[in-house]
Image (cartoon, rainbow, N blue to C red; front, top):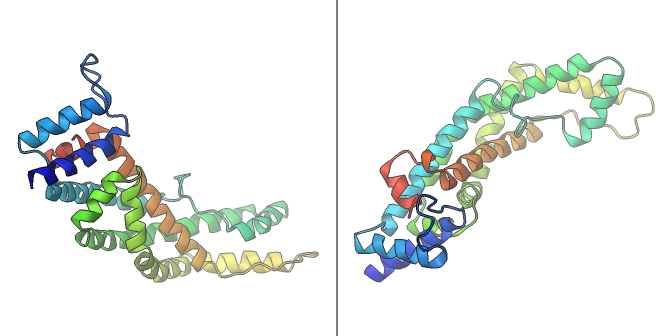
Length: 249
C-alpha cells in the first residue's frame, strides 16, 4: 500500500511539474526530477496524498470549474460578449450575412446574432446538473489518468461522458429560446430573403437549432477548460486545503 501511494504521488508530481510549478523562493535547491523525487519522498513519509484524495481533489477542482464556467456562460452576455464562445452566423450562411449587409439589412443580422447568443445563455443553465452527475461516476483510475494527461484532460473526460446528454438537454431549451426571442423566425426570414436574391446558386438552410446547440455546448467546454488550466497552473486558484495538497504535490 505504501508503495502504491508512492507511485500515485510520483505520477501526480510528475504530471504537474509539466505546468512549470517551480520553487522560485529557494532557487539554489535541487530542481528537475531530483526535486520532484525529494518532494514525493517527504510527502509519502509524512502521510502524503492518497489515491482517494487525488480523486476527491480532482472532483472538487472540476466542481469549482463547472460552477464558474456555467455561471459565466448563463449570465447575460455570457456568450454574446465573450469572443471565445460568441455564436456567429453558420459558415454556410456567412455569404448570406455578407450579401444582406450589402443591401442594408445589417440591423436584422445583428439582431439575429444577439438572439442566437441569448438562446445559448438560457440553455447553459441546464449544464450544471449534467456535469455534476458525471463527477459522481468518476473512478480513482479516471482521476489518476487525468492527472497524468494533458492540461485539458479533465475537460476531455467531461466531453466524453456528457456531450450527448448536453445536446439532448440544450436542444429543446435553445429551440424554445429561439422561438421566444423570435431568433428562429428572424433567421428564417434572413435566409429566405437571401434565397430570393438574384443569382443565388446555392440555397441556405433556414433551420438554425442544431447549429446553435452544437456551438452552445462547445462554448461550455471552452469555459471549463479555461478554469481547469487556471487551477492546474495558479496556486491562488486552489481555494481549499485539499486542492492545495493534491495540485501542489
